[in-house]
Length: 386
Image (tube, rainbow, N blue to C red; front, side, top):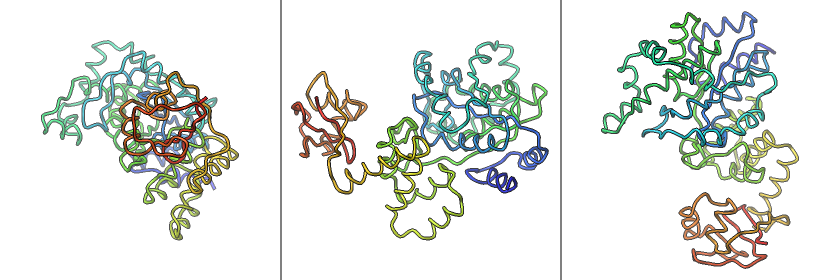
């Protein structure tokens, strides 16, 4: 049974292992390993894309290894551009502080926080001096950095690449030194940063960590799942929102979501794949499973019932969230209630026919809403004005 778990550990949600022979040897030794993963609080939410490595942490944890979860409150200020086609702006300390407030609670939906080591990397990165950074930087060449695919594209197009961006891999690498990581997990876009950890561990006289990279997952619009694209399913989404978002997923991504974002048995998933006749029914299973993972079975059942009534039967649900606005124009209500993130998004949604008031499509952005009206945004989001 353990051999099967180790086999799945090294294959499910895994793109590459560096150094696989080394990692297999460590796992066979029976020694508890220190498994590191870090995430920067660049937004308040952990979304499903970030759960791929966190689920891998749980896999290691269930096999008796020590999980090291790092919140990048310092690296989050600097900004990682590994997956960006343009320079990521520096965040303020206040923004990062606000964003990270619930990160541990969100991660706790997947891993056992009580048995994990939790670190904030400002604890050691904030103490480094120029001499320390100079010594670390000496381990890398400029050519290594600018040969990275996305950096090369930016330079070829004449786009700015800041010196600050060159420092990020040193910081992530030094995290591995501080926590003495045996293994680090991260997305394929993090490969350069993960390898930097190996180089810096050698510099500081440590055995280099092994690396597991995981594939990236597409969001609801088919692009990479990213908070900046607003195409995410977040761990703190309500059950109804989570279920509804998954049901809007492209059919081609259903099996990939099952494999990477759940821990349903792979043999069962293979059967799903070989017998897809109605993608909607299979997507319903996926939405139920993911909602159950981050809420409860009861919440998933209620969310499924809500979806069927509002989307399939086009009914207004019996229980609608009540909302008391400060202004009664449709744009203000959409923003204040959180149905849309901005005025421009509210206007766009209204003009495109995505908003109904008491069952009637409204396309006038200056429309006023009466008390006791029910506003519907999209297929499954409702509020009642009180």
